[in-house]
Amino acid sequence: MVSKRLSLNQATLLKKHRYILQKLAQSNDKDRKIILKNSPNELFKALNIVFKLLANEKLDLSDNQAKEIRKHKPMIKSTSKLRSSNIKGKLSRQRGGALASILTTVLPIIGGLIKAVI
Image (cartoon, rainbow, N blue to C red; front, side, top):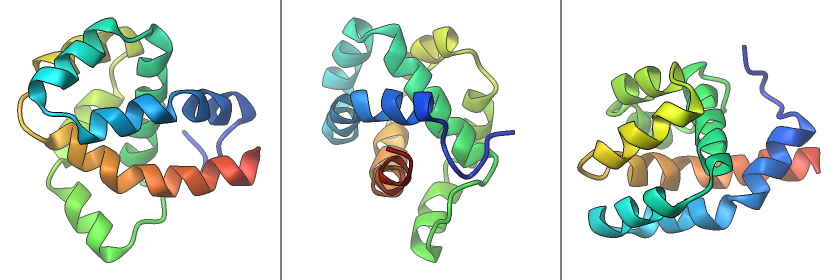
């Protein structure tokens, strides 16, 4: 189980890739595929951490944020069970704005968790 608090390694990994995660949240499908294709494996480890935190419901979400995430719950649960190497294929095949919606909802919360650890 992933705890509410992040480990130091997880926090530094998320902090290191926060800029790329923000760009993924703002990009369209074409740019997202290019970013995912050229990104390092550590980015997928960071995404794996995000999906596991959401799947285990270990983040304190407001009602609006929970409503936004609820739409994508099947994708979150199925992705959280994958290894980080398989997440790359799944997210590059994914169409629509699920990843962008999830990241825009979660990144501000994760920023607070990172500050608490580092």
